[in-house]
Amino acid sequence: MQENSVVFDQVARRAQMVISKVRDSLAELLQRVDQDFIDCVRYLASHEGTVIFTGVGKSASVARKLSVTFASLGMPAFFVHPTEMGHGDLGNVSNRDVLIALSHSGETSELLEILPVAKRRAKRLISLVGNPRSSLAKMADFCLSTGIVEEGCHLGLAPTTSTTVSLVMGDALAVCVAEARQVSREDFAKSHPSGRLGQMTTLCVGDVMCPIADCSVVSVNDDVQSSIIKMAMCRQPVSLVDRDGRIVGLQPIALAKQAQILSRDLTSVTNAQYVSPLAITLTDDLSVHEALSLVNLSHDQYFVVFNQSNAVGLFDASSWR
Image (cartoon, rainbow, N blue to C red; front, top):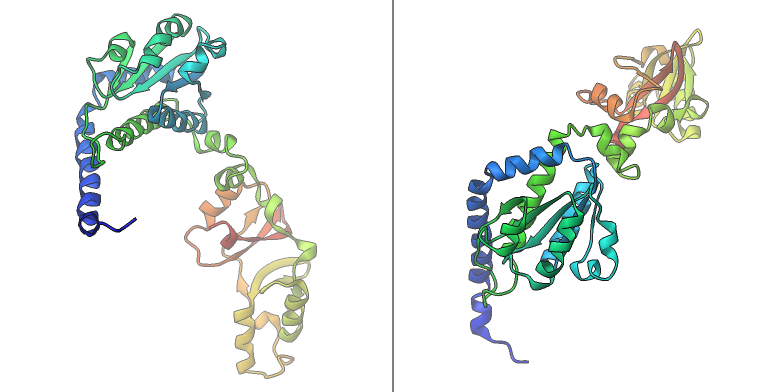
C-alpha cells in the first residue's frame, strides 16, 4: 500500500486533537461529581455484598478493569457479561449484590434486555452512562453520568474519549468508596500478598534479614585486614563489629578501605579505629514497611537487627527502597 503523505503530515495534529478532547472531557467531568456521586459512595461504603459489573463492547472492557480495581481495594467484585446472564450467569446475582452497568449511550440493547430481570435479583442498580436521560440512567437507583462526549477518532465513532472518562469516573468511585470504608495499607496488602507492597506489610524484618550466622562479625580488637577478608568470605560489603559479645557498630567496606591510608597491609590498625556506631537499630518483629519508615531519612544501607538485646541479623534497606 502506498503511503499517503497528507495523512502522515496530519499525524501530530490528530494526536494532539485526541488528547485535547480527552483533556477537555475530563475537565467537564469534574463538574459531574455531584450529589448522586456522593450518595452512591455513601451507599457502597456500607455495602456488604458483592459489586457486579456488566457492559457490552468497549464498556465491557472498562467494566472488567473497574471490577479488578474494586477487588484490589478489598471490595469483592467481578464482571458478568449481559449475554451470559441470560444463559445462566444471572445465578451469580443475589439480593445482597449491587449491579453497576456501563454504557455510554445508555441504550445498549443487550444490556437493557437483561437488566429488568437482573435488577429484581440485585439489591441496587448503579448506571455509569454518558447520557443521563437514557433508558439505563432512568432504570438505575443511582446514576453516574460522564456526559455525551466527542470521540477522538477521525470518524468520531470508535470509543476513545468515552471509555477514558468512564474509566476515570469509575476509578474515582472506587477510590472514594475505599477511603470511606477506611481501607488501610494493611488491608490493601492482604489483597496483594505477592506484590511489593503486600510483602512490605506482611513480612517482618526477621523474615528478610541476613541471619547473624551468615554475616561478617569481627571483634573491635581484630585488625581491619581480617575484617575485609571476612567480608569477602560472607560476600557482604559490611562487617558487624563486636565488643565483649555485643554488636556495637558497623564497618562498611568503604570505611575499611580508608585505613589503607595509614597502613598498606591493614594489620596495624584495628576495627575499633574504623567503626560506625549504631545510630538506628531494628527489631526482628517489625514489618518491612515499619522498618523502612524508621530508616527513611538515613543514607545508610545496612542496619543491625536485634531480638531483645541480642543481634540476630542484618537488614539491607536498599533492596526495599
